[in-house]
Image (cartoon, rainbow, N blue to C red; front, side):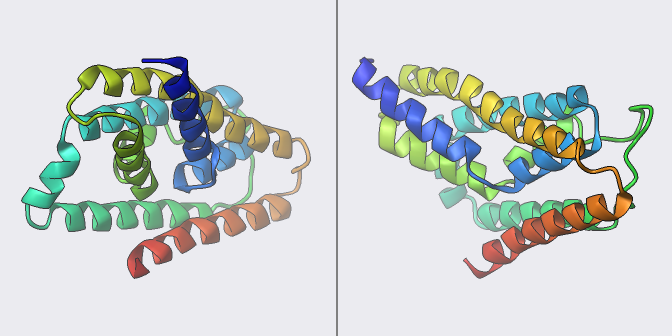
Length: 197
């Protein structure tokens, strides 16, 4: 594969990874609430979960959705339910920053699972593979996935770092509650978008 294909693939991966979405909002929240290390564990799970989804879509999982009746609808509803659950938890947060780092931050498996239930991840996988690879050439899919992995990790990680930067300025619980509720409403709004589409 030539450089003329690698550059557009990388640009697509960056645009799809860094643009706001449910996973990005959870990364931002993790950065404001938990130690950086815990946020990056979530980022690693989300990045690897996305790459697994990307390769699965490249291997034909997306076409299976057209064959199995109700599977796409079931995934859609599972994704909406999971995102609403996360937004309710975020909305109800008390604004107290954890002291010892033992609090329950979203972890590796939450990040990986969230990508499989994230419609943005499905759309990015299907459109990227459709636009930049020959669906029957697994080597192109693997190369694209290898390009995508560091770009996705760095993009999501930048949201965690942005949250950590905000954390320096959030010392009062009332301010953090306001930020968390705004992010929770944005996360729930993404569910409304999924319902009407």
